[in-house]
Length: 262
Image (cartoon, rainbow, N blue to C red):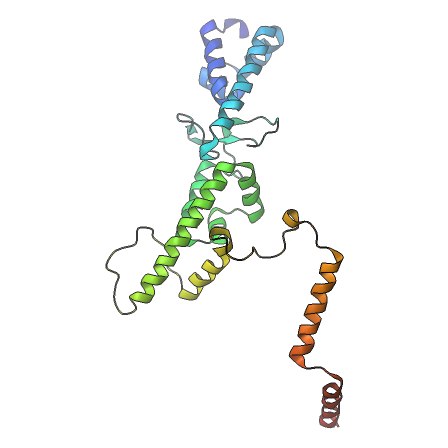
């Protein structure tokens, strides 16, 4: 079969391969057989080198144009009704980066859009993850691999934070009336205490106020033994002060409890 492939089809395959970096998709777009590609690469060193150059070029272009996260370039949104996505790491490694069919567990462009839409309407990362059926671990791994998605995440969260603040102020200023103007950003209905809690949880990320929950060892390194001892000592002293457990009070309480049990 490979002997029947014309020069025009061969050039079309290499041109499409240079766009997507995926031999299977390129063969389908150029209407050639995938087996022909494999056979011809083994028989023609020049063609094999052209294929490798096209794949390398596609990787470089896809990495340079990753402003929209995993969204592929224009014209590569869907193929035969299946969503396409840029797959592979967005870092500086040597892993292949290519346009491919989005799998069910992937962070596809549609999943990213749904996540950001819910995040913008709730200012709640957990609610957005529940909406798209993803775990927090997969979300932060995807965020680390794709800086463009991380930037959209941060921008959406900042906008949602500001909208939530405005909604709280509007609610407080219009307890017995309706606002004069409809809000530009629609926030999902929630209780006032839930909104205040969300602002408190996100203030470190958005405004840089306070620290993030917990001690992040991967940023600050493990605590020193002296720091651990001082922390334990302060906590024990605080407990003793709160309970007032000096010797006389402890003896008096034990005597009182003995009398009650007797």
